[in-house]
Amino acid sequence: MDFSPVELSEEDAAFQRELRDFLAEVVTDEVIERDRITGENFDEGVHLALGAAGYLAGDYRTESDGGFSAVRRRIWELEIGRARTPWFHWGTTAMVARLVERFAEPGLREEVLPAVLTGEVRLCLGYTEPEGGSDVATCKTRAVRDGGDWIINGAKMFTSNAHNARFVFLLTNTDPSAPKHRNLTMFLVPLDTAGIEIQGIRTVDGDRTNIVYYSDVRVPDRNRIGEVDGGWAVMREALAAEHGVLERDSAGLSKLATMTEHVLLLGEALDEAAAVVGRRDPGGAAPGQDGAVGYRLGRAAARTEAAMSSSEMCGRVAIAATMREVAPELMDLLGPAALLPAGTAGAAGDGAAEYVFRLAGPTGIYGGTLEVFRNMIAQQLLGLPRPALR
Ligand SMILES: Cc1cc2nc3c(=O)[nH]c(=O)nc-3n(C[C@H](O)[C@H](O)[C@H](O)COP(=O)(O)OP(=O)(O)OC[C@H]3O[C@@H](n4cnc5c(N)ncnc54)[C@H](O)[C@@H]3O)c2cc1C
Image (cartoon, rainbow, N blue to C red):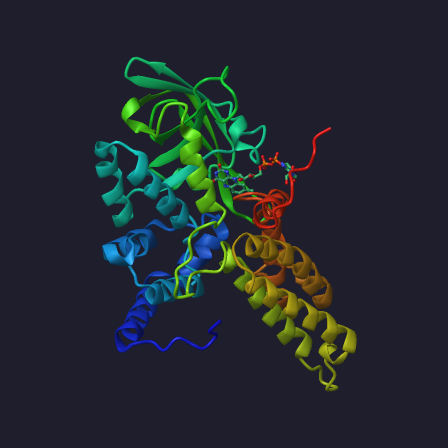
């Protein structure tokens, strides 16, 4: 394995400088503050600016199709995270756009794809239902044929970014009498269709997501993605992409796991905590001089490094599990002022550990819970048998 730093060519170094300057201009303090308050993880002005500058197209396309090289993709991922860009939902849009490109009829493809790359069209995921999300194939939202259209009825829980998106990639049940996995059909449903109601929900970490109700929503058959009752074939690809089970580039520069941005926040919280406990009082003493404090901080740092270095599904689990273990440890070391959130006078380390503490719960839920991922690691990576059901 080659751990040496990558030498940037002059062109790649110029790309990095331009990207940094661009992000410094569009991702202002005001944008970051607004995102913190609203929990949207999205800013339309920033998104459109990234589209207009060609960055969305560069990220979406493969290198052979005019997209970023492996080095530039790595620079892009690092810089966009460092700038704290409200950005999280682009991955969803890009993932659904790839499925539209592959499975949709040509007219729909042409309507959606160019506008995805300019940033005007955003796409969101409608899989989870109020009665359960881990086993998405138990979907109850019904789609019934009506001439050349489909009529959809049901409800979807946690449709994140629906209020900023043009379409939802919707999982429906088209044949309740058929065996599981053989009754699902996917649609790309315009979110401004009559009968759709979007209601906001705030999660414990302050994120905004939605519950979306579908009442007699009429969708033309051209908006179907894949075969009727063949939705599981489409979903399987979508879930593999969401779980981070993708082919890796041979240059070794790919992002190690999904949600690596979250573990960087934990790293920053750790740095903040180290700075606070290292601060000396007028008598010259600092809490960090206590061996127990040093031991606990060191152990937290080692765990965080290990999570940062774990890949794919194991990385996904390590990141969320480490956030859940380390954030309370940091808060314990920092004392009562660690309970104050960012932006509050007197907050220890500007509330970094408190925020990671609240973020850690949902991080181990969305895109698949830790328990479900552990099952997948056991069965798919370790080759262990499925548990016997009694
Ligand atoms: C902030 C946030 C954003 C989200 N965004 C979206 C989105 O945009 N679109 C979307 O469709 N969904 C979204 N989700 C939903 C998310 O994917 C689900 O919450 C997740 O898959 C778990 O489903 P559930 O909440 O229904 O829990 P359930 O499936 O009801 O699970 C409940 C508990 O049972 C455990 N469990 C379930 N099955 C097993 C098993 N086989 N083995 C062991 N334990 C098991 C789970 O780990 C969990 O602890 C989001 C969720 C959150 C919190």
